[in-house]
Image (cartoon, rainbow, N blue to C red):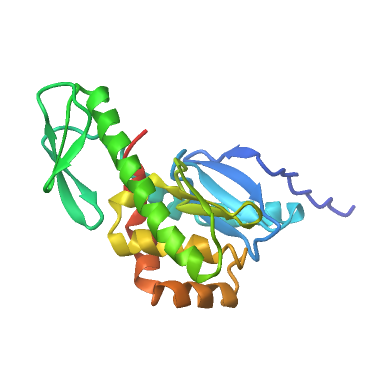
Length: 240
């Protein structure tokens, strides 16, 4: 009697699998060229992406083969960092000292010192509110410069709080959103992301023409892109 071939489990996009030492979330992205694996910066889950639903079984096998990589990267994720008095935070490539003002005042910058009032969560919120304001001003100024070089005017620039993405662009609406945490990155890195998203107004993809556009707007972007990949994850620890 011939043995029956064991059927592989059926998987669905959005499904979360308990793999014992970690949880694995399944995702399908029709624009993906291959199976990919990453750690979600917000939830800490491992996320495996397949180009098509039939590829999910192969994607799960791939993720399980990288179990040690997943465990090590989850263990290295930074804990949440609060803004507290008498501490230093990165700010556009410099170190900014946080100091309690002794009252309930809003945050304000004096030289290389950022003062704010309030206790605990209130102090944290005032500092974050100030950083968001600075981030929006930087994003609007630089994005407008790059967009105008491409012939676009009245581009809407706003901030978002996503952990895992630095920016997004909706060309049809001429709308660009950027992570407020970029204010904690070196200034050339923040400017690079502005140029990157502005280039998406003309090229809604990551084709060779897109990267050539980014280089035309910003110059050699490789160091900034590399910084985001190697150091950027630390910034997601800041804030809510």
